[in-house]
Structure formats: C-alpha cells, structure tokens
Length: 295
Image 1 (tube, one colour):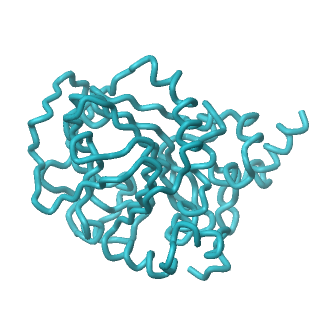
Image 2 (spheres, helix red, strand yellow):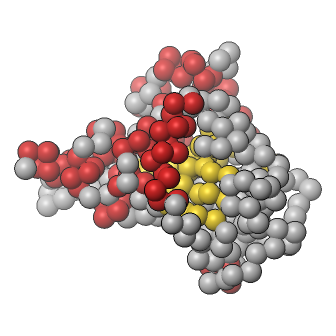
C-alpha cells in the first residue's frame, strides 16, 4: 500500500524502527507472520495502564472455558473503562502496520486485557481471524497487537507462535481449539500439553514491548508456571468491510466515543469503508458523534 494512504509517516516511527526501514520490517512480518519491538512504552505508560486496570482485575473473575483460561482474567470493552487505552489503539507503531496490512479504513475488532494467573494451562492453538470463514492459504483479514504490560517469559505464559504458519493451508492443527474448549470447564493442568510442538517459539518480551501478528498466524497463550501473574493488552484490527469481534458501537457508549481521539472513533466504526459502507440514515456516522459533543 502506498505510504500516502497511511495516516502514519515513516518519520514518526524512527524512534522504534532504529536503523531499520518500515518496508524491511513489513517483509519480515510477511515472512515470519509476527514481529517484535522491545521497550516501546515508558514506565509512566505502564503505570497508568496498570492503575486503570486495577479495579477491574480486583474482582478476579476467571475465564469461562479452556480458551479464555479458567485461571485467567479477561477485561473487555477497555475504551469504555478508561481513555488511557486509546494510546495503545492508535500508537503510531501498531497503527502503521495495521493500516499497511488492512487499509486506511481498517477497524478495531477487539480490545482486551488478558492476565494469566499462576497455574494457568496452555491455550489451544488458534489464529485470530478464523471467524472470517475463507479457505486457507489466504491473505490475513486481521492484525493483532500484543502489548506486554508485564515482562513475558518462558515460565509465566508468554504467547507462543508458530513462525511462518500464517502461510499454511491447514484450517486445523494438532492441539487447535475445538468446540469443547469453548464449553464451561474448571480443569487446569499446567503440565498437560496436547499441542506441544518443537517449532513453537515463545514470544519473550520486556514489559512495554509490542508484538504484531498476522491474523492467520497460529499461536496460543502459554502456561503460567511462575508465581506471578502475566498481563498483556491486545488490540486486534480487521478490514473495514469485516464484522468486528466485539460490537464496538454498543460496547463503547457514543458519549464516551465522542470524547476519544478522532482516529479512535474511526476505528470503532464511526467511519466509512469506500465507497459508502457504514453509513447511518444516509449520512456519515461521525455526525452522530458530532451530535453527542454538542448535546
């Protein structure tokens, strides 16, 4: 995609690209299916994020099944809970890759915090755009960002990836999620691993780092065999024509969305995918936000 079609310039990315070019990083992402940038967020950023999440994590509400993780906490609809999370959604580094991959009209498909507590088992293998029911191999219909709020390690449940698997034709692999993994479960065994693979790579990152993964990349959450929780936040992006995983226009009240940065509103769905997908009563949806701001 031509650079002029993106809202982020390469000059804005220099701090994180260092001596690399954006095009070179994209080629690496195309080859491996994932890409890691270390130490992107400041300690002040991490502190504000942890403080915003603290009251929501305090309830210690566990996941509902093996996929969510019965010893994990998942916090959804983050933008309705604090504007702090907007910075992660429109961080220039993540947004540049999302727009390059999916187009300027891309949307925010999901935004959630995932805390793996001690004793959590491995997640089933999956790829994040599997809800787009098109045969593989195919171009990805999503890009996922994984922000490490805590350091992720080999023992505390770092996300595991299968490099190059975004190009695989298989719709399923050994250890992939099955219907039973979405049923209610209280079983949790950190040593059980029916999907163990020698080609799996643990995405070990310092706190404040960013991993980007194509929507077709096979990955999973690791087992937390440590004595401390592991926390990440994952914004997931989709093309402007795709249905979002979370219904953002209901999850984020319009009055809240109106107070967020304009680009966040566009990603929530107050935008148009050319030529006119997403209109409301024949008009651009951001006019609804204009009404919210003047009421």
